[in-house]
Image 1 (cartoon, rainbow, N blue to C red):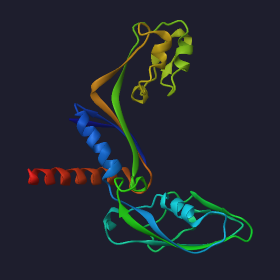
Image 2 (image 1 turned 60 degrees about the vertical axis):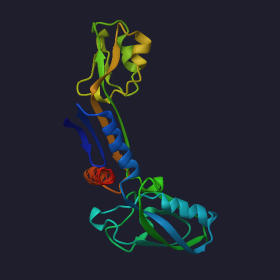
Image 3 (image 1 turned 135 degrees about the horizontal axis):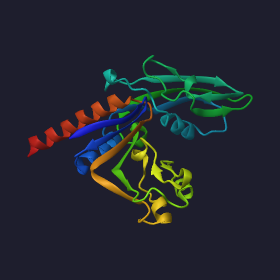
Image 4 (image 1 turned 90 degrees about the vertical axis):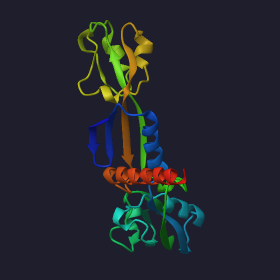
Length: 248
């Protein structure tokens, strides 16, 4: 097995798994979505709410704010936030006052509510630990994978190459001067939609998959960094495998 990192941009990464079992790739994906523990707001004590938004809706919105979850604090109790605001004001996640400076909203610009003149809020919100199996608000990332694309162009000289290239939704084809080609370094971005092949025909451009290579994409919602998500995922998988081995 080999791993090749194609992109690593802070909260997003793309890498290629070579000679990798598809079922294992899916196990990693499912564990990221359902098995990695993070913090999320669960309990909201509303002391005052004169806005037009019901308490229950407000609590639901607060619960969907991704909360930074330092791995060293894993399973170490609950953390809280206070919010006391008066309108007119656009209240954002950054207005939440945390009980711990390391546990803060990962998306500070997320809008909670627009308070009109005279409207006010006074509440306290408490976090709990959980994973995506309990609720999607705990899921730390959006993750998906697909086989590595393989594009074959028998003859680069193609009439209407620019039209064919323009049909690609991810812009990986170059059709300048009736010469059709794949842009350098862009092949892995192909989504295998086959829009180009459906228009021009498989004799002009053929899109298929390399089943020995898997492109794995992961985009963190901000609770954890990519490295921490992967380390927590592997730890969770190892624990599940050990549990199965013991019971067998």
